[in-house]
Image 1 (cartoon, rainbow, N blue to C red):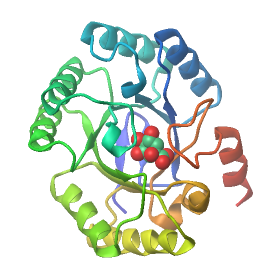
Image 2 (image 1 turned 180 degrees about the vertical axis):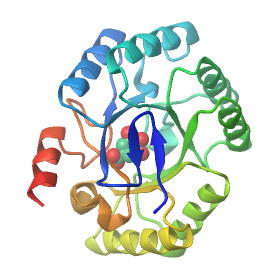
Image 3 (image 1 turned 120 degrees about the vertical axis):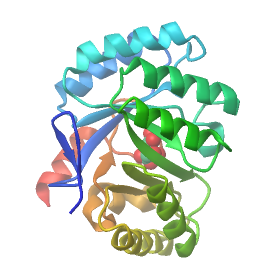
Image 4 (image 1 turned 90 degrees about the horizontal axis):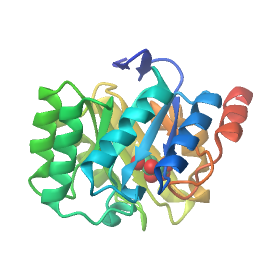
Amino acid sequence: MQYIEVRELELGRGPAKICVPVVGKKKEEILATLEKCVAAEADLVELRIDHFENVRHIEDVLELLGEAREILGEMPLIFTYRTIEEGGKGDMSTEEYCTLYQEILESKTVDLVDIEAFGMSGAVSQIMRSAREHAVMTILSNHNFRKTPKQEYIIERLGIMHHLGADICKVAYMPLEKGDVDRLKKAVIEADKRMKNAPLVAIAMGDLGLESRIYPERFASCMTFASIGEESAPGQISIEEMKALMIDK
Ligand SMILES: O=C1C[C@@](O)(C(=O)O)C[C@@H](O)[C@@H]1O
């Protein structure tokens, strides 16, 4: 079993960890949700900065991250700018996206950055290089909110992310029928074998995908996403429900 250590958290070893995505628009709103993440004992949080109203003002983003860190203490923080193309709110150009990630990596205020592996031509290798230089861990991700790709395509995409050196490879796709969830499961189990159990995350979104969220180990996943307040993707359940379901297993 391969695993990574992010602060005191082991990802890829032991039970899958619960990550809460935080999607507030205003600083106060975001910080209040982070307090709730601590109170609810999430394992880690994902700051979905594409929702933040001042995302184009780097000083405001850095100030927010500084205050977030004070609240979170040792709880790991993932920094994610999700583009519209992959189901988020972000409409930055490739250049702006690169600059944002560059500034964040230099600031060393986050533990992991989520980079869209196939969206921004040329951006990925540049950001990966910078993350390595600044010793920040990386999640390479791919999303499709409309459908679930073919099995070979999923295996290939996870393989490319692994080859590019991601610490965690992540896919999230929308199933249109139950068979799509089964296909995702088969694909990630095969990819996991080929990647020799390197940490990965696979999510089937929407109501049909619940199994992938509450039984992450069936999808070889080291992490599952649960909400506090507003969900960041269809099919997420609350952290309370998730904890109750995971204990009941
Ligand atoms: O990639 C993911 C997974 C996700 O899309 C989900 O379906 O839970 C939620 C996103 O916030 C996160 O970046």
